[in-house]
Length: 308
Image (tube, rainbow, N blue to C red; front, side):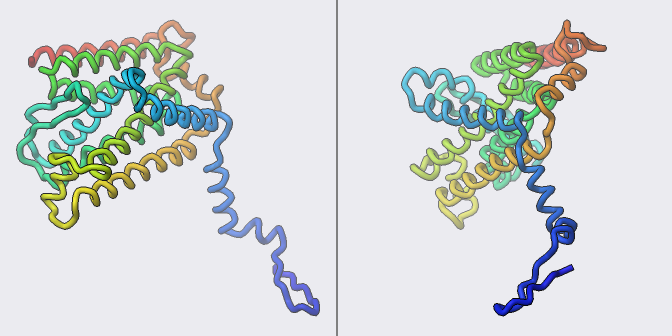
């Protein structure tokens, strides 16, 4: 109960430690602080993500060295175009094809649908995909699940872009890297690879929005086309809105990753040995991951090649 100090200066209510520590507001605040405080494993993940941001920003503008990011830029363009296509399907559009250009551009050819939903879906969708991959990058098993989702994504991507040689090279290369990193360090390397793709995707969204809509107006861009449909704001305004949404996605991904995946590195390694383990590891089902990956790759290849 409150204790009062009867001094000449007046009455000053003081709350005892026991009553304050049991107050609902204090309990909620303490629990939130505990949930949002990263542990040692999460701190390492955050440091790696920060290093990714610095390295990507440097390589982006360095001559020749920027070629290292080239395949990952094309992958994020694929996320962008696939977001257009998926929202188009959800709004009853007919997807004719997806194209990825060597100059890091892309196009989704569709008819029908709802333009005021399909147009902003590119930036928002790729930003959301990047955020989801960042969250999965906090946990090894979540990264494995993310790879299975990416396999399905690659299947649809190749279906709509099956006549594009560049797309085949890109998807096969990324699939090879995923399989390679799956075998390194019991899946730890795969976790950091998924984290890198997520950070790269979100950074590409930020840079592309600034470059196409804020710093300069590109006629025919998503923001320009969306501004023509809405008629209420110029493309730069929509660019700023999408930029803020991408930043929110990135920040939310970090918070969700910290709150959701509190396991230590040792706990993640132990759990990983029993969930889609590396073939040859000491597990009850050592061939499960290999068989599952082989099945997905076989289905991807058969479905796409059979419709070329």
